[in-house]
Amino acid sequence: MVKKSLLLFRTVRHLKLKQIIYQFYYRLKPRKNLASYKPNSVIGLTFNALRFTTAYEITGLAGANCSFTFLNLKKDFAGTINWDYQGYGKLWNYNLQYFNYLHQTDITVELKQQWLHDIGSWLNIGKLKLEPYPVALRAINTIRFLSTEKLSDPLIIEDLYGQLDYLNDNLEFHLLGNHLLEDAFALFMGSSVFNNSTWAETSKRILYAELNEQILNDGGHFELSPMYHQIILFRVLELIDWYSKVEDYDCDFLKFVTSKAAEMLKWLELITFSNGDIPHFNDSAEGIAFTSAELFAFARQLNIKPNETLQLNGSGYRKYVSPKYECVVDAGDVGPSYQPGHSHSDMLSFVLYSKGVPIIVDTGTSTYQIGTKRTYERSTNAHNTVELPGCNQSEVWGGFRVGRRAEIEITKNTETALTAGHNGYRKKNVANHERNFIFADDVVSIIDVITGADELSLKALFHFHPNCKVEIQNPNKVFVNNIATIEFTGKNKLELQEYELANGYNKYLTATCLTVEFKKQLQTEITLL
Image (cartoon, rainbow, N blue to C red; front, side):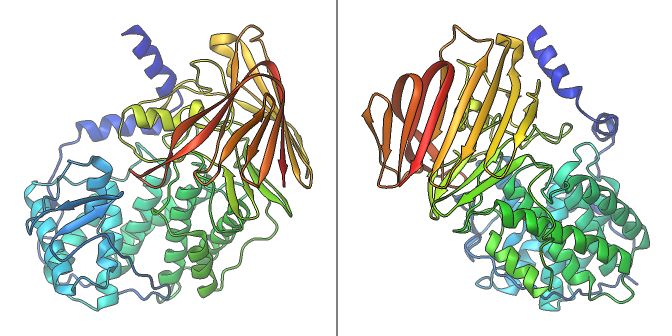
């Protein structure tokens, strides 16, 4: 009990006071159904359709027989949809509520309207509770659907207004981060379609403040997940798209969000591999966000160009490129300090591609469900860095919590070298880990030095892509396909074992992990053939 209390304290102490206040406020606040937020009369409630340049189509989420597939898990409701279905967990149910499938062309408009009527009836009587995040995403999708199809459905419009009014009254100040941004994007869009100046003022104030804080000096999103960066970038591009076509738009605000889009585009351009992949650092997975290529295409449609003055900096990521390889290194802190829910214990991890082919990869994210798989995927053991026996660099726990955090310091940062260290093991073993990368044309050299743990057997971990055939050639050398050789100096033992690579949510591929045991210091030379 005492240990759990101390862990909770080490977690909560990083929160903003605003978050704590709103946590209590929303827990004590009486919960209302949608009917309580709807206008007393629909007379005078006008829906002003928006116009979009960036058209896109979603496929494979819903079937006309009321079957739904999210996170690679399918559920057939046989005609009667349970909007509160929890059989596959909360995130699956949220995806059901988001209504992204409104953009499927193989589902009739009439059936989509029927589904919106149905979920509205559940929300009106409290059979399904209102929650800000799914409300925000559903509102955005509904507005786009009604606008694109040129529909005037009084019942849907009335429900939509009520949900936006609820959102305005329940903005996620207790969470902040990408949740509050999504709330603001939805409310700002709603303010335009319903000519609501109060919503416009509130949402615009949030967007100014949060985009300034959440977009770092190198254009990266501060939750340090390439996937969430893609998600937020699309929202910014979508806002620019429709808002630039609204009469009497605020020129200064449009200029502001366009500049943020240009910064975010450059970060994404820098972090994306030449084959279009993103590194799956922190909570990142395939099949959730628009790809980098799609986002670059959207930006070109809007005539928005990347801010070429930026280089990777504040996000902590560094990328090194030669004719033979691309390597991305994570040398950033857990972030943001008050909302680290999507962070992993992965300092000084790296991902390596050769000529567009993945070699050493991140294990990725396959679930948000609390349990052994979620715990493993956030652990140091699941990343390409050095692990002390049974220790995580940072106290990742629960589904989205972090207690004590490792702190990183970069001491050398050039075009061909990076030296950084962290103190994540200081509490339990009074140990520090320093990792020195040296990048030559066809060789990546890594020197790991651990101080303060002289007697401990340490582990350097290398997670290979499933297409890699990894063989130990001799006591000091490993051969990877016809792509690379890896040679070690200072190792005690090499061992190959299987691990599960997250191939999207709830999908796995069996791959090989190389564990290198050593003491004090290890030198690794990866030679690209």
